[in-house]
Amino acid sequence: MYISARVDYATRALLTLAAAGEPLTGEAVADRQGLPVKYVENLLVDLRRAGFVVSQRGAIGGYRLAKPADEIAIADVFRALDGPLAEVRGERPELMRYDGAAEHLQDVWVAVRAALRSVLDEVTLADVIGGRLPRSVTQLLDDPEAWVARPARP
Image (tube, rainbow, N blue to C red; front, top):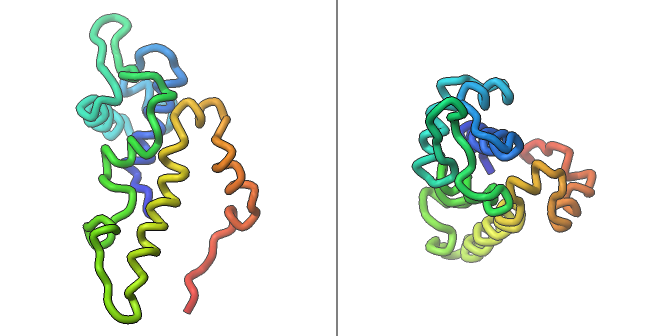
């Protein structure tokens, strides 16, 4: 799975806003995360359009979350910015059809999507900020192999 800089930065921006508890400017968000200011400001506009943040004018202006952090799943951010969690050549896995030796490949792609959902749909901004990930996620992290990169097999 590829996690784009766009999704990573947007999630970090949302986490920063959630933790702040008060409106922050794009510059403040970028500074707290060490991100490019212009990029964050553009992301915040996109996040406002997607309904994740609202902007506030005035002396205490800036951006704040549009809804509570415990109502925003990481998957919501991913889907809003980059589309479906899992696609095969731009198509949803359940729409794929294969023949012959690849007949059951669709099952693998659907299972991959289900695995992604089991983490990304269950983890909210509030979970990340509080360091209280769902048990199903911490069980995955408890496996030492989860932390080890594997090279491609020849």
